[in-house]
Length: 373
Image (tube, rainbow, N blue to C red; front, side, top):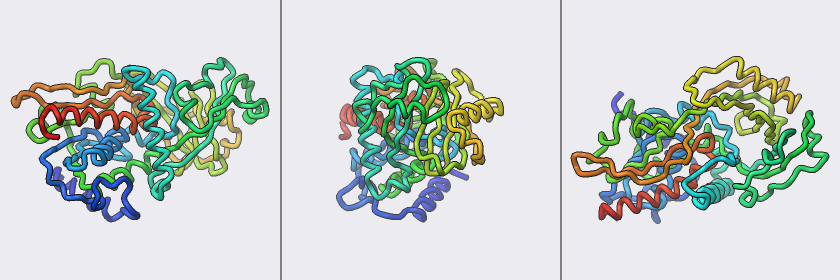
């Protein structure tokens, strides 16, 4: 199937399943403004970072023609494996502390705004509360990034420390946002197409130079793919595995020591997890599955009766710091402007809207330097 046929198929499927008013329309006349600009922007990558960046581009650069180019979509992306609870790790890092905090604050505002719309259920976004317990270190249950961002983040009471079996010495209770990518990504794709965007399926891209002459700016949201495209040795996979179970009685998220978590969602409860540094193994490991069940059932014994819905593995694209910058790639036409936006690790869902906003500003800067804005 050629790219044009595949693009048309995706557009048709999205149109057939779209209902309700568009969210954040990209023009004053509705979701499909006529695009007459000669500004052409390509987002490479269709995971949560790529799709959210594409929507932000349409919102902020209303006359630009935006294309998403990728080899994998929706359930074939790493984003699909994520439970999607807004809780960045304390080691998550942008270029500076100030910028990192802005990304996180902007991202929370985006998810919370979407939560308050009529699109929230279809987009897989809701408010959720949870606990984090530790028997080892009080620092484990703190989070300096979100304690002043989310509406509630407080120390757990003594009765709350006894909610789950175990000798828990430290704990926190917090209220945050859940964004389930198995729902959000199809929703975001529909919004993008409604807003006049184009999707192209490309089986391979060996160099950004292949896009020279077709786009004024390319936004690189390829996640782990940037390791090859950019020869980026700072980018490493951190393997994660989850088990999704049917447990509708679980309404609250729980975190505990040894990367143990139980996160309810729209389509089952996610049990995790593991973090295998520099592992490229995408196969489900029965030993990891058994360890995850054992730890999660020890935390919530009622899960012993929960049937398995599916098991999945994802390779988190980890980079310290996240790469968000402009690069001029030398080409036969002097230079192609590439805005890099990758390396979010296990926090792509959490921070995608924040880094998307920053990436769009860099696209503006790139277009200005190219005299096209």
